[in-house]
Each structure stands twice: as C-alpha cells, then as structure tokens.
Image 1: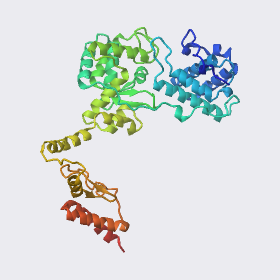
Image 2: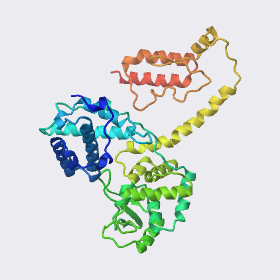
Image 3: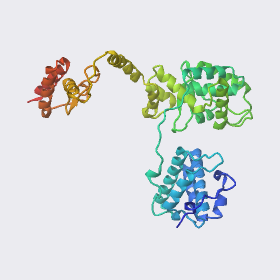
Image 4: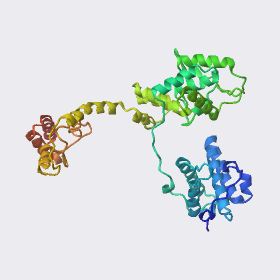
Length: 426
C-alpha cells in the first residue's frame, strides 16, 4: 500500500484538524473510527478528562491525515510503518502562512500517545489491530532538559509591585496566590470555596487533588488572608463551589489565568510571563535562601526529590562555594610568572609531568603541584570505601609513593588502611 504523502502534499481541510468531528471521519472509515472511539471510551473510565481530551485530539488528527493521504484505508489493522513515517514527515513540514511547524515536544507527545494506543488495543485483544506496533522508540524526538524559566529577584519585585497596585481584586488574588504558594494553574482554578483552614494558630491552604493525584496543605501568607476576604465581598454569585470565579460567575479556567498573568507582567515591564513561571520563581527564591529540598518538595507537591532537584541546578550554592575556593588558586597560577618551556612536548615538560604525577590505584594523576586537588584520596576517605587483603600490595606501593614524595597525610591514610587489614587477619 502506497501512502499519497510520499508523492504529494497532504490535503488541507478548511478547518483545523482538531475541529474535525468523529462523525465526519466515520463517513469515510467507520471501522477505524469505531476502534478509536472504543479506545477513548475505555480511557474515560480510568483517566482524567484532560488526558482523554489530549488522546481524542491526537487520534482525530491522525485519522484525518490517514484518510487524506490514503483514501483506501478503512481500518486500524491496515495501518503500517509507511503511514507512520509519512505522518512524521507531515508533522515536521510547515503548513501555515507563517512557515511554522509542529514543535519537537508536540511531535513527541503525539507519537507517544499513538504508540500507547497501538500497544493497548493489541494487548486488550481488539479485533481491528495491526500485526505489530508500527511506532518505535527511535521515532521519538529526543527530550530536552532545559532549566525552568523563572523571574530573577529584580523582575519578581517589579511584578509584585505592579500587582499591589492592581485595582481588580480577582486579578490581584490570582497572581498573589500563584506567586506566594507555588501552586499549579489548574490547582488554582480548582480551589474549593472552603480551602482556607485553621491548623493550630496558623492559616493553611488546602490545594485539591491535582496532577499527581494527591492533595496537600501549604502555609498561607497572612497577606493572602486579607486578599481572600476582600475578594469574597465582591465575588459574583456562583454555584460552582470554587473560591475563584470569572466576573460572569463561571468557573475560572487556565486560559483566563494565563491572560491575567501575562497582561500584568507586561505592564510591569518584565515581558511575557506564563503562570507556571511563578511556581518556578518561588522554588528558585526558596532554594537561594536556604530552604531545604525536602521542604520545597512538600510545598510544591512533588512526589520525589528528583522533581525538586531541577531547581538545585539553577542555584547550586555548593558549586558556587567550591568555585570561589579554587578561583584564587587558579588566578595565582596565571599571575605567578612561572617560565614556560619552549617545547611543550620536549624532555623538560615530560620531566615536569613525571615529577608531579601521583600514584592512583589504577593509574596516575598528572595534576601540576600548583593546582592543589581538593579531592586527593577522596575514595579512600569515603564511608562506603572498603578494601581487603587482595589489595595489600597496591596499598603498600601507594604508601611508599606518598612517603617518597613527602605526602604525609596520604602516607598516614594508607598506613591506617594497612593496619585495618592486619586487624582483620585471624
């Protein structure tokens, strides 16, 4: 079977592919559509509405592409590798007047959802399935790991000063809650009307079940208590049960929040700001001021420290401290005026290298003596280090080498290690 995309451009419909309905697609390929809709029906039982919606859009885009480029295709069982390769090229090809194409992240997400779809319908024993999953791991664009985007202290200050002058209570409360609690925008929209609770002498905010399927309590800044009270006095009538609602009484949604944050940020002169950047900003401010990773994880609702450690990459105090310690030593080397040999590969340089090399367990360290090493014998001093009688000869050679070169601390270390071997002998 030959896919038309190999020889011609895909047929563009008059409406965006997301707006093409399943009923319209079913007119051309009822069996394929029935299989995909059956799968979506199962997802509704065990997945969140937003997840089901993402799969729904992806499958409709894929089905529209297949029917535009291979009109004879009628079922999921007929989908082959050639269709996937053509779909990948289609997503990577600019298709609008601005020359824009699908981002690498969008392509990866769509291919990932399609791969899961094929895996599950095959595993679940559907009748209309291909012989094998036509999407492989190598099809996925690589995942980038950029640092989270955040506002520096000067930008955050300008933003919060602008927010303080915001006359609209809802807009001010939206930005203040995001900036001072670090909650996700969907969590903000889902805050219940009774989310403010008193625990002991302190007010806390109950953040509802969200992205990671759990709820949590975070300390509530006293300033926010007053903002919530002020907002309640002007909040329009609503039956949504939510703390925050739009001016017309409808529930708050993330697109409205994004517009509010972006407009206030531009008014503050800090450019485009997405609501999630306020979450990153709070985490960065906290880690810069000494808050433990465990406490930050609890505040943000992370299930593992691996999620929180990304902020340590932004502001690694240990790295900064260690860098400051060695910077003056390196600078002293540059300013020392030591004569350099004319031939860097001549006998003089080889003699210098041999003179300063330090014996290791399985090689030599040739760091010049001017560059002192903070990690000398680091493994042997680690609490997880262990040696036994098998390495006695190597330890004795390292001990002799340290004594010969006047390295008293190293010599003492290996003397201690050899002594521990003697104690272990029966």
